[in-house]
Image (tube, rainbow, N blue to C red; front, top):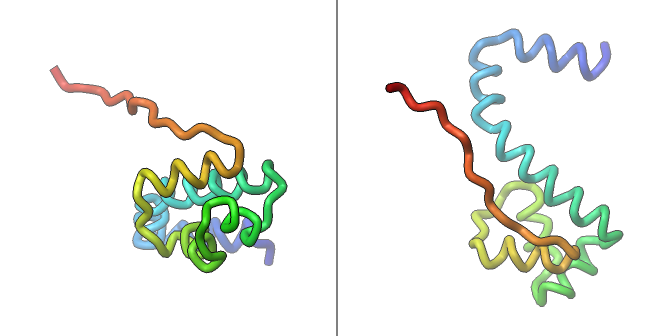
Length: 95
């Protein structure tokens, strides 16, 4: 059984799908962090040194086991050579 087939099968369960959708933005954000570090060509250890922190803190952040401050996220992005900004989320308003 392929991973894609297993994922489709799991997501056919409404409870699993609801939880997956609830966590989807968090997973996307973690993927973005990992992508920045990969594009910078840095290991967790190298990134930790640039941020003046411990590798375990980088690991927790990248696993989603942390609640980082905005300042920490800025340091992470800058250490990887990126800028971090927020863009407005367009919401539809009922009139």
